[in-house]
Length: 181
Image 1 (cartoon, rainbow, N blue to C red):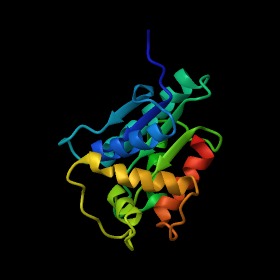
Image 2 (cartoon, rainbow, N blue to C red):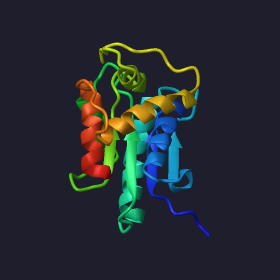
Image 3 (cartoon, helix red, strand yellow):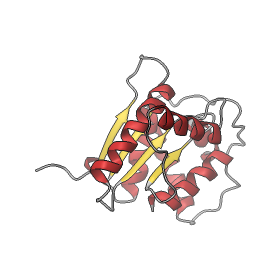
Image 4 (cartoon, helix red, strand yellow):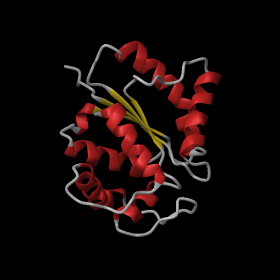
């Protein structure tokens, strides 16, 4: 029997994958219900992989999976020095280059752009003042993001008040509410 996929995750690395998997687990999504497409390590810029792969996955999402109401396509790409809107524009341009229509407003396709990287979000969730214009240290192992997932989950459930989040996290929360929930 084929497993039923509810989320297709296109991401840059294991840290992003681990973070999203743990967050979705809190929502009741089993790891078996997530199909991950991750940039292969050591083969160029991971952001380039996501940009090039996004149009293909969007096209497949539309053609093969459009009838499945519970399915979502989630994309994580670091903002690096570009920022949220520039990265989203790059994904739209990649679609244009591959002759695929960009995502529509009504599609269950969410794009999360942690800027500078997801470690910026981790620093914020630890209570630090963050600047999205500079990188933060990576975690020693991806699994250490569990406490950050817990903090974000509590915040999403409005059980805990946090200071205003960095703009990229605000955008991700809006994407999540509009396109995932």
